[in-house]
Amino acid sequence: MRALGVALRILFVCAAILLSACSSSARKSNLNVFTVAVAGNQVFVGESITFGTNGTFRMKSINGDPTSCKGKFVYDRFPKGKAKFSCTNGETGNLRITAEGNLSGTGQGTSSLGPVQIIFGYSLSVVNSKVRFPDNTQLKVVGNRYVLATGR
Figure 1 (tube, rainbow, N blue to C red):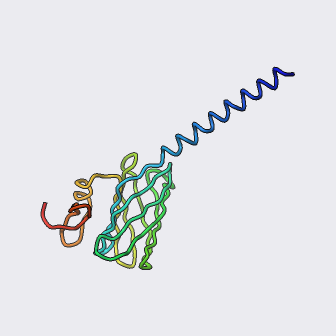
Figure 2: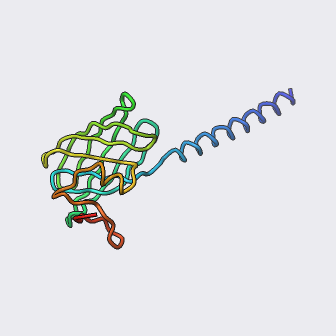
Figure 3: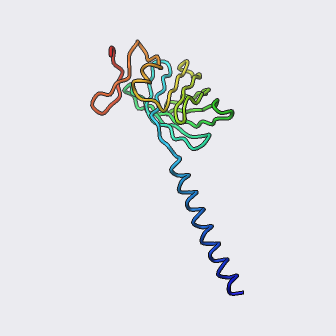
């Protein structure tokens, strides 16, 4: 009987270690990636946080106003998915997204500002090659801020 008690304690400790290892690796699966969206003449920069087949994103306008947006996405038929967002200026929208890599992808949708493009998980140079920014500009880093600038 005493041996059974010891065996149960060992089993309990092993189960606890396994569960903590699983939850610890699940936390490591949360990955933040560079995210850019263009809605009309507004450009937003921020990050997406992915966990499995869903996640969230947060972005701020780089157009000199205080607008920020946040949203959620889900891959309902991987690599295809959908997203919804809302902004502090009342703007809302829906997007269709497509995963193009483990943590990267693009999307298109609509809002009251007009068509919306979103891209996530790519370097700045790839973002500039894939996104049409207003007035044929490009996204650049000046100091520690993102800005739109002409030329390369």
